[in-house]
Length: 172
Image (cartoon, rainbow, N blue to C red; front, side, top):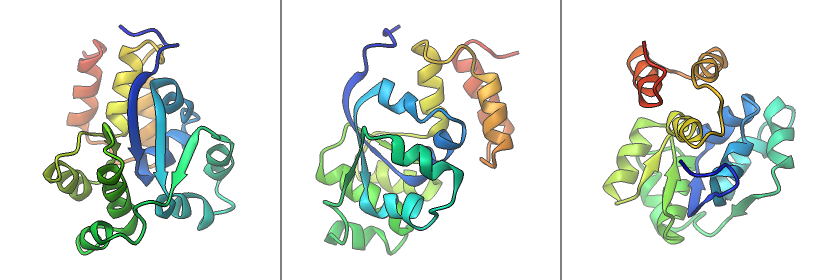
């Protein structure tokens, strides 16, 4: 197990949903503690912050000065090609991860995950971030966090819930 003070030395790009739900749970700082760099496409930032200025999560996201808004892939040929099948935020996140040669893309949407995998990107969703945080000792328990996540509106099916708990030894 890695010490909580030793973030992984990886470049991470984040899509909307993981940022939104981690902020809702008050756990956005897990990303800072797990990874050295987290890039957010400007398109995603606009979906999260600019388009929803009064949302509770906006204050948390704005306070996360360690999140780097990167407009590099916005409007790129790659993003526009992906936007034919995905929403703009997912397309921008995948395009930015490709452009910056990211080690990891945080994305939850199934179509986005499929497209990212087809592009050769390593992916992790919100649940994967939480499982990793639990394994690294950044969360004392996963079950209450998953329960809170489901109550906050995150679609979490029973099979994934059980698999996540089993992955950290909380099954049963």
